[in-house]
Length: 89
Image (cartoon, rainbow, N blue to C red; front, side, top):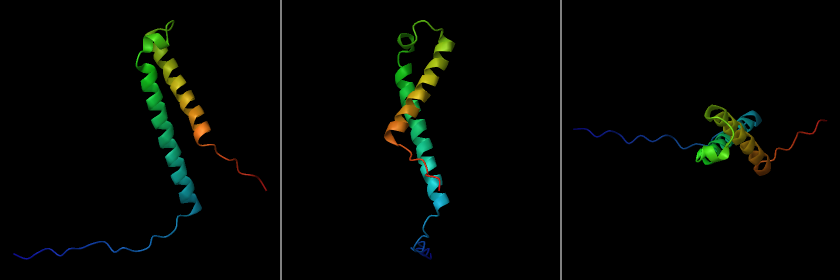
């Protein structure tokens, strides 16, 4: 029985990323972080939703809590990852 040849991909240098690719990677990172923060905050708020929304009904309270989690995640993103505005020439 013949052995299969051990074929490895050629290890070569990768081309440097373009500015557009770098921006895309940064945006993807920030989107993933925002989603992660939102879900973590939402999980914490929903742990005991009745105490977080005493006067609201279940459905209304759920939407309020979701909106609150997104707002809190956005605020956290602003603090952790401040984005410098591009200066116009």
